[in-house]
Length: 170
Picture 1 (spheres, rainbow, N blue to C red):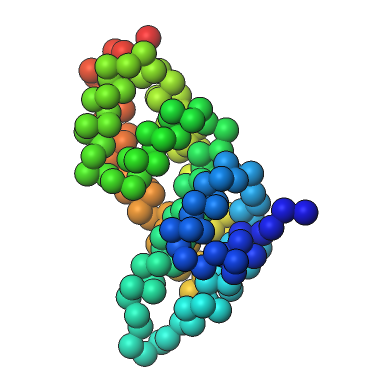
Picture 2: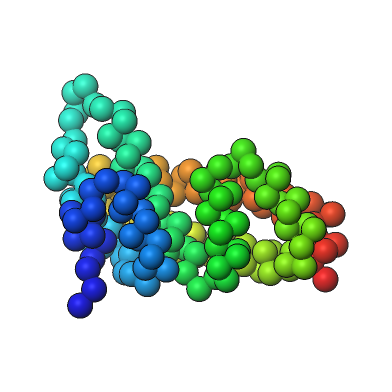
């Protein structure tokens, strides 16, 4: 039986190592509301929530943890080249214009556009799952994680919707 994300985090609590391990799963993991709760519990075992003098670095780590899992789940089933593009775009939103220019020059503009549509649908489904979580710190971390993904998705949508890009979609 495969490890849950919560168990994987308990074994790899360094965020970079954990995210590398999640990436290796290629989206082949459960991310139901109960799995999100279990992962949140594992996170709070390591970083207990403080209602007074909150450690903002730990809060940001929670957002990054959620974002890593949400993004990899949303990328499941997309071609590797497109996955790499989206990972770079979500990790470095300031580089989107340059990344888009590279795709404009390639033969894969249509693939990027159709993959973006699938990515948006996956993110929307994940947001619905997050909305099922009970109010509390776990839900807050996942909302923070998906919010940053939505912000970048908005930027991507602007670039992909540009006439120069659409004309290449064939």
